[in-house]
Length: 310
Image 1 (tube, rainbow, N blue to C red):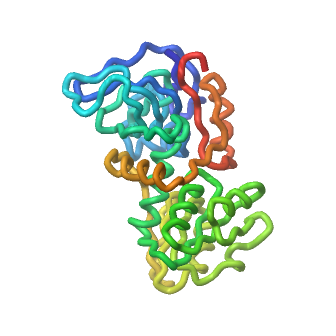
Image 2: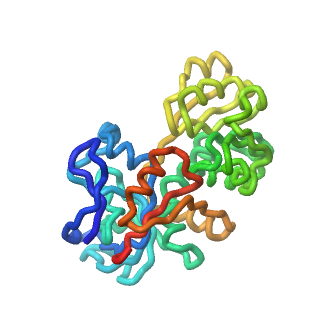
């Protein structure tokens, strides 16, 4: 079968022919229709992710994917051959960018009939990160104002919609065609960071969702009100600066947890949340998808078709 693999850290991911995986008693074999790229995949390739995950090389990349169950392990209950599923695998094992993937049965949730495989694959890491960073970590409440950095990206596009539907006032930063995209998703105000200084345009916000890090994070402390909250997915905030300014600053990282994912997928399907897909390419064109990911310019999620023949 076709799979996207690396054999050493810092290798360029390559398309290879490898045997289909076997499954253990608590696993299912999924025929993968679509898999989505995440910044985490780049961290796996660079080797940075080995500080957080036990990564055995060679590895097939891909943590977020969707498809159809082809086999079930002897100890598996609740799943049957033919079930359509979304899978959220551990980064240490990956497996999504392949025609077939073996995953623990409890890493799967049902793919709702109203969502395509590409949309389902795009949800796990980005959707969970956006939801729980906003509501579990930052405690965003109706009527509060949130500043979402990188509002046109994978996490940001979900965050704008979740915050808007929760009754918050949403300010986003974006650039180029991302400005109109952020508006269309529900942002009340969008700052084009290429032509405007967000720190001059925005003040007194309750929550900053930092998806960028670096200088953007450093300059974001000043836009928060006293008692405000900053949550970053990109870089550990400086708690001392936060304390000096009377704000709470923390970092959020989403780990695979199927029950939490299932609830979110159901909510996305029922509430009509738009799953923004930047591009959808066949596995044979993975290099194009990888270049788009590493450019940092994607509008929403980058999805790869993994079904045979693509």
